[in-house]
Length: 251
Ligand SMILES: NC(=O)c1ccc[n+]([C@@H]2O[C@H](COP(=O)([O-])OP(=O)(O)OC[C@H]3O[C@@H](n4cnc5c(N)ncnc54)[C@H](OP(=O)(O)O)[C@@H]3O)[C@@H](O)[C@H]2O)c1
Image 1 (cartoon, rainbow, N blue to C red):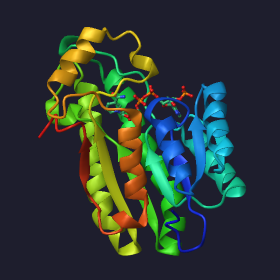
Image 2 (image 1 turned 180 degrees about the vertical axis):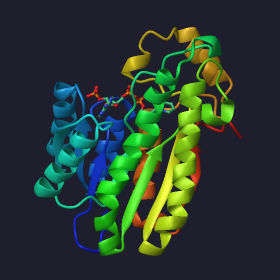
Image 3 (image 1 turned 90 degrees about the vertical axis):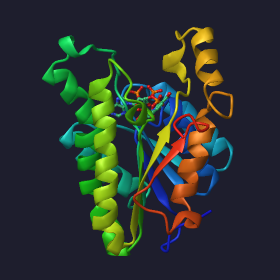
């Protein structure tokens, strides 16, 4: 499905090489969107995502950049515009490590690590992409938050605080950018095992699933289809919202 007045929609998915970002990239491509798959270190995985998309008849290209670095975000933006066209849909998904740290061991540096991903990087990417969205009177910004903000997960206060900050950006930018035709929303997943959760014991996964009203763990596709909906014309009157994709875990 094409959401764009100019023709083919272009989306950037940060951290599109693995986990939720890979599923989001594929879901957007299935809807006819050209996808810029950003990765930092997993080039082979990003190539696999691109291959799955192009084999299914979609359009995608891969772009290496550390999205927490201003110079690399500027280059990333220039390369995507030159290759696929200006960015209409910005999916802020990338994450670094999320260490468990007790308060007594928490440092400002560890706090900044999380703010780099969930505040600094979104700021850099929004400032790069919003001017063109404003010019065309259309745009979508979709952040991947977390239920951790609602749950107040212990020993994760840096991550939880940064996830809360994402929601603040979402709400403020929704009001600020609404008159320009840009919607800004946040999708908040529950625990959704990806490659990085391979070491989590099965009984922990089962215990989490047992506490979910829909009585199962979520899948990357559960998140990806919600992002695709928000990127589509069907979601044109939704902005400033936090949509939980967690089987009702935080209802
Ligand atoms: N999975 C869950 O249970 C869950 C739950 C709630 C919220 N979330 C949120 O969902 C989002 C995705 O999480 P995930 O579980 O899919 O993570 P993941 O599997 O660890 O994937 C992280 C992605 O981010 C990329 N990345 C890391 N550092 C980067 C950087 N500096 N620049 C560009 N890309 C970078 C990685 O690419 P490279 O490998 O190429 O570096 C990878 O593609 C995050 O915002 C996370 O907080 C996830």
